[in-house]
Image 1 (tube, rainbow, N blue to C red):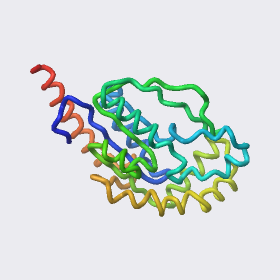
Image 2 (image 1 turned 120 degrees about the vertical axis):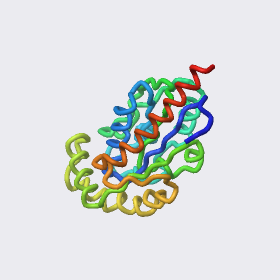
Image 3 (image 1 turned 90 degrees about the vertical axis):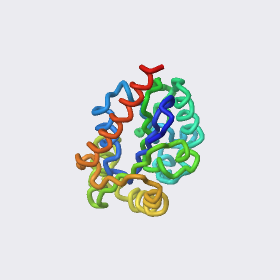
Length: 218
């Protein structure tokens, strides 16, 4: 935890596709209080591919670090850290483009940065106070990926499987899995690990109590 109670606590949550990292982030938010947490998901910072045809977008490697506009994400984390609101872009996975809309994210006492490559970029890591890696068995992750992409993103079964074998799996082994070494905490089984999540929540609540106490003393 940071000793400076005058600025937000920044938490990075990474892990492979379908690992449960988003569930972990949401459970932390709901337990600590959504009014106390600002969340930036890496998915919102994918580069806009509107200049490509839809078939070309479908073949794009979304699991490589180059697919993410990390400088943009770092800027928004820095602004939130300074107590400034940010306009988070809205990204459509149906069209693989930015919609042109945005979501206003207000500053909060805790900032969560979540995504498969949340711990990959060194500049982003350097802004974080706590780094978490969510680890889940590969067979569970691929089933979750299949279910999500078919149900929520309008993908066909063969496309999801081909994409997983061509880019998702190799990129996970090359870029995502190695970032586990940067983690302060590894949470096995993601959102199913209530014990680990409750420990994180308890630590955050203690920190928030310290922040509230310091503000009363000002």
